[in-house]
Amino acid sequence: MKMKLYSVSFALIAFCSCKKMIKEKPQGFVNSQTIFATESGAEAALVGCYSHLSTYYYFGIGYEQFLSEGSGTFWTNQAAALPVAHLAALSTDALVNNTWRESYATINSVNSLIDGMEGSNITPAVKNQVLGEGYFLRAVVYFNNVRTWGAVPLWLHAPSSTQPYMARTSEDSVYNQVISDLQQAEKLLPVPGGQAVGHPHKWAAYSLLAKVYMTLAGNDQSSPYWQKAYDEAIQVYNSKAYSLVLPFKDLWDVTKENSKESIFELQFNMSGGSSNGLTQSFMPSNSTYTPNQKTSPLARVRVHKVIFNDFVNQYPGDPRINATFIYNSYKSNTGATTNLYPNPAASAANGYPYILKYADPNYISSVSNSNFIYLRYADVLLMLAEIENELHGPDQAYSYINEVMARARDANGNGATDASETAPADWSGMTQGEFRQRIMLERRIELLGEAHEFYDTRRRGVDYLKAFLQHHNAMPGFNATNDFLFPTDDASVKRLLLMPIPSDEINANLLITPDDQNFGY
Image (cartoon, rainbow, N blue to C red; front, side):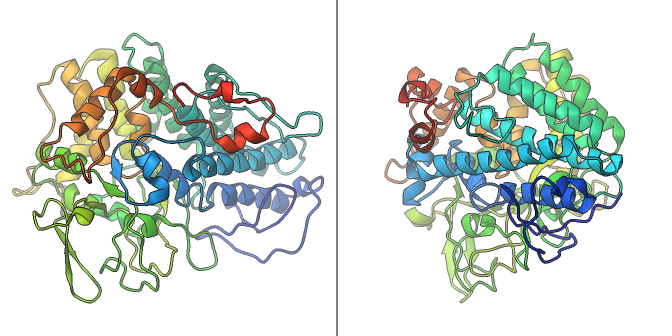
């Protein structure tokens, strides 16, 4: 079934027009009690959910900037983001409050969709797909929220006059709801086929549920969640629904989006649809990477030196380095050269590499066509490698990680390793513990800049996060004037496992008080 998407405005659902989808002008306001009586109305309501998910302050850039800088992996000189980037976030910080607000705007929209669809009598195939996507989207946002803030209000219906507020709900209850929503999505979503570009199908739910179980397993090798994670992820692998894009650099070509590797990808389009600030925040100012700019990118999000060093030291000669980073130097649109790390001539302000993944040569003013990939197949392969190692050791885990290694060294993208393509080499000969450490580094290398870092550096617990921060602080050539010195005492590291509950929520929600704030804030 090919779903047609329309723009509509009603209740809590906003206007939206999604990339590469049918776009129609809104025909006026629609009564929220009748909109779900027609297929076009239900599909329009679903578009509204994607509209909320794609706003500038959520997947448009706010989410990525908040979690990237708050992970300890990225540097910034933006004054408003410095507390988050210094790992000293305040409950009053705009990044904290905006991300929370937009996440709950999305949840509110999805809850209205799910409630409306439950009583709808439209064609079962359309109803199942719309409902399945609704459950999937709600799971995405609550999974983000519980990993970011821990216990959060668990709204499953729109607020009402009888229930205008909600207290924090336990992490266990939130995770249980995420699991339930994804299990529903697995049942309702179709297999890959005719659904619109940018919409998830069945295997997306399996992929995300595998990640949920892996997160719940934490650092406990004996946890039963490792097997649950494997049972979900192996079905995605065996489905053959996805494959790795060759070469790696093509994943970030704005003319080759929604690839065979993409599992869930947010659509952005400068021409009449949703646009984003990814290029604006991640790209250097006045460079040949944005030749058509009217307003220069802001260069807000850059990579800490130690992250670049770890990549280059682990895999010298890896083609992914040139596809992932802007480093050493770049040319301005006027032909001038700006030096960057690790060039010793780089100034203090330019002593940090950039992420290249969100380059868009068509960038103008403050908007970009660059999509945001929330989940891709290489991530599933890395999950399977990590899960298999925890269950049985590395012997069978190599096959999954080495698919990623083979793609990484295939710079020509011809599906074969040429004589000159020797790095990164296949993995072999590791102990279980060695594999465990390397797979975490490999996730940081392969997925850098894709908003996984905050979660990956915290899901293994306090000891792993503390070691990560100590490694950062011990970087050779550390410059206390410009580089960030992170706290590593036990109390601070425990605090850094979560972000603070936003002050806006505490002030507005009568069932959440300052005493309910997360540890250390």
